Length: 415
Ligand code: CAP
Ligand code: MG
Image 1: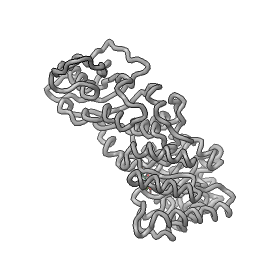
Image 2: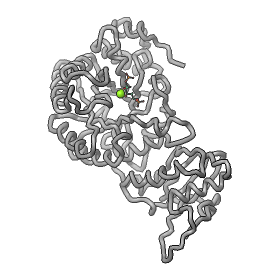
Image 3: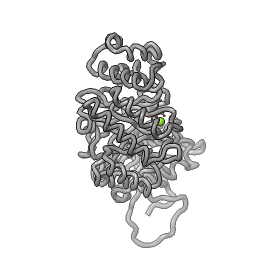
Image 4: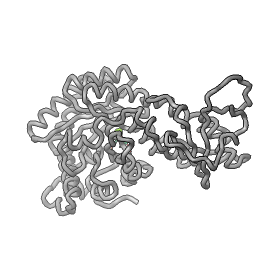
């Protein structure tokens, strides 16, 4: 039984077993500590160690994690499978991203990456649909699907919101998404917004002959979320939107279960992720947050714009690659690029991130000089052109709405 001797948790010759969860951390030890000592403490505090030498008798299962590699500031820790409860993301995170983030033994520590072993990964459901939503729901062929989020974020009445949806859908966009601040407030109640927006969706589908869908924000406490998921199914929706970081993954797991009962897809928004991942040498990387979101079962997830948009993003392309890659047979996840996008940025976006994507723009649609409908036409035309390898400036000769968008925002990529 390991006690206060942190060396018990350090073995640089140790080869992790296939069944172990292997995590990579960036560690900056406290000023009075060397890296080996800090690494041992990370493995100790995140498995079965504590600060005191214990006087506990009896046979106790050895659940020690092992700090098994140190490379510069990178520390690899292997966690035995028995440490984890199957299918319990809250418990997994309490181990690998819990107390260690606040330990005095480290000045800074960041959970960079996890290698999920089969037994633990497959104890989670993963996405129901993943990238197949592009085909299964929209028949989008080889282009990215498109989405918009009404602006202003909050304050539009239900009628205005649904009307904006109609204009966006008939302008050519696939998805209308609620903004993260909009759930069930007096100025735009959830139930009314759901039914009115789906009514406008049906109208837009009839007029365009294209499939359209609505990402209604169900985020709340778990009980309310499940009621809202049921309502979406009852009224013929295909999707729900959940803000996965603010509501927590335990709640996402319940939503995933209920969505499977109804065959609904989950769109994961990630507000508050930057509280974990923005400081580069501390916290939890977006890559790991994306891994956790995939395991818990979201079908699509915001992963940033590869630096083209308004927000700081951590390696969108690398995260997206991970979301597409095989994970012990679990479905993949469709990445959503959003935040400060407009039609002029679409070719570079597709160049950086590929076409297996959802391209979303709020301001870049509703800020079009001729309004939402024109903005939607411009975005869809830019996506169609870029996906087909055509120059969007050539396309703009046939699509005046795109020409106006390019005149307004240009095609320059920000530094
Ligand atoms: C986009 C957005 C999303 C951000 C979140 C917004 O609107 O709706 O919340 O995309 O960031 O309110 O900013 P704009 P991320 O198109 O008007 O910027 O996708 O990186 O999680
Ligand atoms: Mg938003």
